[in-house]
Length: 198
Image (tube, rainbow, N blue to C red):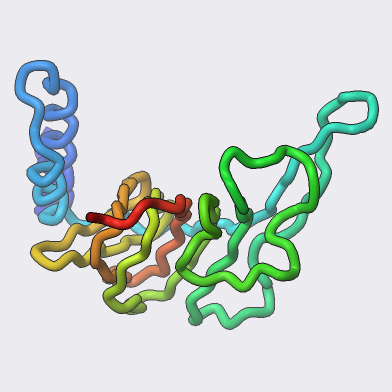
């Protein structure tokens, strides 16, 4: 089949290169950097809307049966649509954590970029197009999962463009974030307290 649109051809070539590299991984596994650099040349996927929905928390009743203990919206619907949003959907005060007790985060939680000592934070964020979060270092192991839009991870020596489905394991290094595309970026993060680098 002949594709007349050059953009479509470029997207398909990029998809095929990444897909073929993953399929042939047993024989010639490409480095993450090589795949990531290849993806930078491919146009980002078409914008898709992403619904920010509910936080559903499960529990166990007096008879030992599981049920929905709490169900509520994650994001304040009255917030400005063009402003960055962040909501901590759960806070772990210490690991291992208890499966009973108060629903987190409790009223005393003040947020920020530092986890409770020995604990963790689950966070959902939506940043508008063009938004930049300044360079910083957090004393934590962070799992970042891009859900919609595009996000750029900027490190001291290089940067990476991240698309929906991409995951970053941020291990306490200096970094900043930028939303380069025309759409907002929604992503989830889980921050685990970590020992400082030696």
